[in-house]
Every structure is written in structure tokens, then in C-alpha cells.
Image 1 (tube, rainbow over the protein chains, first blue to last red):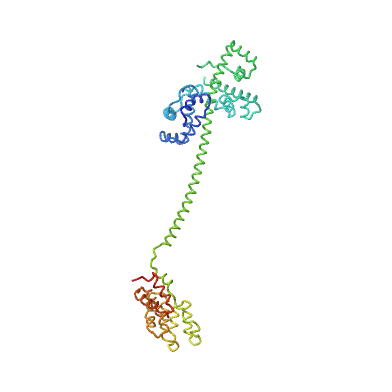
Image 2 (tube, rainbow over the protein chains, first blue to last red):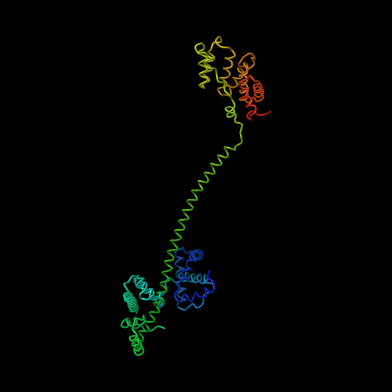
Length: 170
Length: 268
């Protein structure tokens, strides 16, 4: 497992977008977690895997949002606790009211409605921090200018979709 | 803090070019001046910054989500492959297990067969130690003169003991010595390998064995001794065979010695 020094650096590296810690955590703990979830919540393997993914993404969101500023002393216990909460919440309230969902969650839903290419370009640019040349390389575009135009188009589409959705909600 | 929703569209391209560092130095300077003076532009700029921040969050969230999903698929595939390999290994192990079990069973059977307690098997010992009478040769018989004797001998040599016996009994006494007929009566009965017939053979053989003048007496004694043994009359068998073994002129001396020295004839 990780040394205390490495653990201390986890939050910092997560904040700067290095997700490898969570990827490794998932790889190492997936089966263990699935056994726990089957015993605790009678979840089948695929559902428990999905639950762990959801919890890890939520953990990442907490770090990225600044809601979590200190790494819990026992990360596994913390993650299991989050999973527990998640299952209980899902059992008590089927679907959260739309108004309760935050602005970012709404944007996330709209993001998922975009085409796969647009999702990739925006992820490369806004999360990975690739420059247009690298985006062009990754996406197979002729040059950086094409990548810039494509990214611009995707951003505009997403923005316009958000405008339309907000207008429709009122 | 939520800014009033302002329509970014008129400014979007410009804001993007500024944010992405695509403006030339004079362009950027001019844009910065406008930002300070134009309230609407400034508001649009702030809304754009918020959108970018939200988008960075969304992109990070989605990247992790998709990476975990891809990893999950990879782990599933790996697990599936591992369990396939395990299933195959178990199958091979089972096959080898069956082969090994059959091998062990064969070995055990062979071991048992070789080392089984040597049960007194009279039949096998009889076949091993009994030296059968060869019968009279054609020269001795002289077929033209004694056709029935020749026929009896042929039947005896062919293993047809009962017909040989009947033929023998049809031979008139005048053509052949009485001791010879008695002797072969005993031999043919003994050869039938039946307890009753072996018992019936004994008086014939005994009568010849007692005739010290007969050339067949010594041979009759050997077959009599063997007949006793075959009928489990051990004492009589041993004594009779001992006298054969001590008789240097007896053609069966060596055969008798072998039976006596073997375990087939239990000691008293």
C-alpha cells in the first residue's frame, strides 16, 4: 500500500488532475468491495462495481470542489461509508428533485448529451490541458487550427443547449 | 455565487480566443481595456469563466468516470480469461487424475497378482511336476500285429483318453502282457484328470507296481505316487515317490525327486 508521504500527496495530485491514485484504488479494491457490498447490501458484482465507481467519482468531485481538504485517515473506511450512504439514500429517495441538482450536475447531464467526439475534445482541452496541436493529434485532425475550430463549435453547442434547457425550465 | 444569466453568444468567440491565448499582444491589450470599460463584456467574461470552471469540473468528472468504466471492462475481461484458464487447468487435472487412478489401479492389480499369497494350487503344481507317460512307440507296438493297441496309443497321444480306454479294453489278452494292459488302464484313467477316475486308476497302478518282475513296475510306482498326491493322500504319495526317488533304475527318479523337494507336497 501507499506510504504516509505518498498519501499526503494524494489530494494535491488529485487537485491537479492526476487521477491515477483512484484508478489504482479501484483496480486493487474492486473485488474486495464487491464482496463487502454483497454481504452488506446484497448487491450483485456489476452493481457493486458501479457503486464503487460512483463513490470514487464523488470522492474525486469532493476533492476537486474543495469540499474535502484533508485525506481521511482510513481511506477505505471512508469510501465504504460513502457507499453505505449512497445505498441508503437510493433506498429512501428514488430520484432527487431536479431543482436540487447543482449547476455542475446539470452541465454534466448536458455534456453527456454531446457527441462522443465533442466530449473527447472538451475533456482533452479542459481536463487534460492538451494544447490544440495535441488535441489535433489525438483526434486525427489535420492541424491545430482545425482542433481550435472544433473545440469552439463544441463549446458553443454545449452552451446553446444549456441556454435552451434553462429557457425551457423557466 | 450565481451570476445573472447573460447571453454569451455575441462574445463567445472573442472570450474564447482571449482565454485560450489566441490573441496577439495588441489585440489582448485592447481587449483588456474594453473589459475594464464595458460592463456587459465584463459580465460575459465572468459568466464565461464560470462556464469554463464548470466545464473543467465536468470534464474531470467524466474523464474519471470513463476511465473507471474502461478499467472495469478490462478487469472483467481479465477475470473471465483467468477463470477460463482455471477451468481448462482443472479439466486437464481431472483427466490426469483419471489416468493416474487407472495407472495406480493397474499397478495395484499387478502388485497383487505378483505378491498374492501362494495358495496351494494343486492344478498348477500338477501341471508343473507331473511327467506324463509317453505311451508306447509305433516300433514297439508293431501295428500290423496289434492294431487295437496302436489305435489306443494314438488316441492317448491325441488326448482322447476315454476312447483310448475303451480301445485298450478290447485288446485280447493273448497279444499283450497283462501288466501292460493293467498299467495303461491306470495311465488312461489317471490322464482323465477327474478325481473319481484318478481314484479308479490307483488299483491298476498299484497292481503293476507290486509285480516286481514287471518292467513297468517302477514306472507304475511313480504314477501311483502322483495319483496319491493328486487325491491328497499325502503320506502314501510321499512314501511311494520316495521309493521312486531312491531307485536309480527308475526313469522317473529325477521327476520324483523334484516333487519331493518342492513345496507342492507338504511336509509331515
